View 1: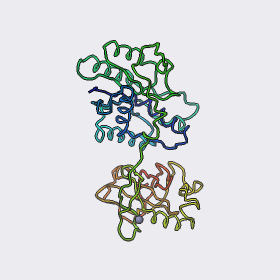
View 2: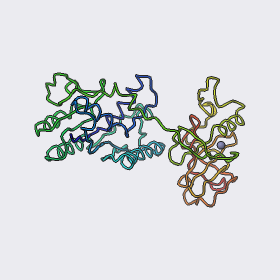
View 3: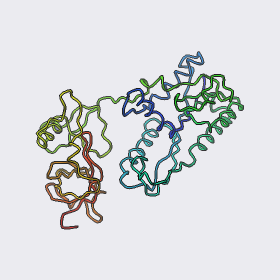
Length: 353
Ligand SMILES: [Zn+2]
């Protein structure tokens, strides 16, 4: 039985895999981190000629970073990233080490920042943390036989050399377009590996996260009958979900259009030209409140819905004081897209401006 530990450069993987998937025509590609260790184990056992029961993946380590001090407009984005790290830890038992990157109030995505702004986020500690854990485990006599590293940067060459000098084997998992020449080299002049590289390029089909259908509760206030419906869509925490017929009815009421194009493709909904601007102040009505969960929706006169959480109320305002049907004003925190509601902030009664 070979004891295997996996060490993932999470920052590299996020950057690399979606780009790779896109070149293969897969948009919105997500890795199934639950199957990743099994796929790696199978590839290794093939290289060892060991049979998959010969491989015991004893631990998965993931090293990555999380923005702090970023523009509040990116709060949803970062909350989802944080939830993702929690999922890895809680559902898949990854050992995660996450380091903060100071964004100094900037937007997180480069494309959202002012092109004139020379600010470069500086990631701290991630590489060194990976190298330290790897060396620590490799230096102990009993913890692992094979260290699998999922990465592509040449900075890791010295630590991979050292792990092998300690008598442990190294397997590299990488992506062809984002792997340093020295790591990929089949002749291994740099002395960094004991196996042919496992190329994720060849494993995309298996690694893609495919959601199993699950039952959700339709949150449309107009819903008729049984609220539960099956969907493969995974809403993020607190995001409203409408069943197909409610979304369609809602859309028809609003535009006289069908939600679906003839081919069944999902349209941008509501139409882009009707969308307000980010930060714009709008009037609306509290259409629906989920008391026990602390969230609700406001709907504008045009019929566009915005999600709000109790933390999105104007300072000092308590959730209980807002009633369904009540008129409010709010600012647009995020815009609706792809059938999902937008988000509101600073929700307050009109007389509280
Ligand atoms: Zn419904």
